Image 1 (cartoon, helix red, strand yellow):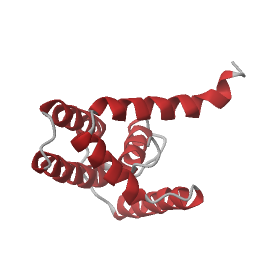
Image 2 (cartoon, rainbow, N blue to C red):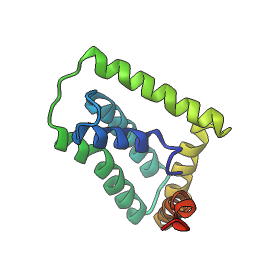
Image 3 (cartoon, rainbow, N blue to C red):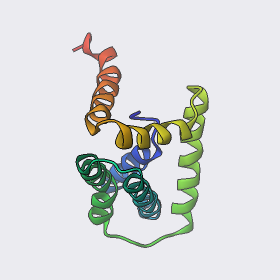
Length: 141
């Protein structure tokens, strides 16, 4: 689920922008992603998620969207930023096609985890993804 959620891609983009590896500002897309997450938060309230799940969902998503917005603090939107975001989204879709995955399934899974299960399952999934990403390199270190 680490690379299957577009929000994580936008977070990586914001880090690349913050450390000046790319010049396209991701703030517009961070704001859109934050609005989508607020809608997801409202859905979780209607699905009667536990307060722990709601709190973790809010803190986690705010940290990967709201904190980068505050770190960047440059709210100018230029055409190159929007175009870069479109290309970045197409790259994400290409990644999902190559891996034969449906992006909507992961967002449904995310809502399911936070409404029917525990936020701990989400943490385990992310940790497993990081471990699987890191494991091919472990033998070289």
